[in-house]
Image (cartoon, rainbow, N blue to C red; front, top):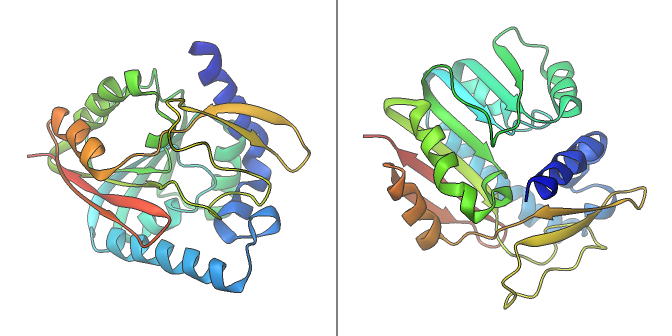
Length: 230
């Protein structure tokens, strides 16, 4: 498992320069005007829900990536602390936002420990990369990073055709495997963890961590919602 998680970090380090193509539906992720619009409409559904969580004083973003969601957190929070294991992702995020209201930390999220508490923690497309045996301790760390009355906001992938690259096929839904093979634009291949969560199962994990979840599904692509710390 340790080797697999290190390969997952290597994948996101190598993918950093092309990561935004996935979010923007460009290149291999362009599935045509109609499907692209449905994607962007559902992203906007999640974004508008996140923006209603503000204003707040402080936010923590775990697996911040290239800043796609960091920019929205800056709209509702006075300060954002952004954490990622990939220095390449952090460099793109920093160059994109150029904000002195964002602090950055390079850390493996499976060994990361919070140094303070925040009003909001945000996990964008990260929980699906957490192996099941790591989920409980990870969510305990997230809960510990929230002040009393704080909130975890999450968005992640549903199992959906046309969500990934045009040359990426979905894993058999009856398979017990949590592994996916991913291919970059240059043809290099990596194996990563990919768990497609359902609201009932993810909600139970959040409740076990002492959080009170409210989860939703968009029409096709995303599971999203929040979990409050009493």
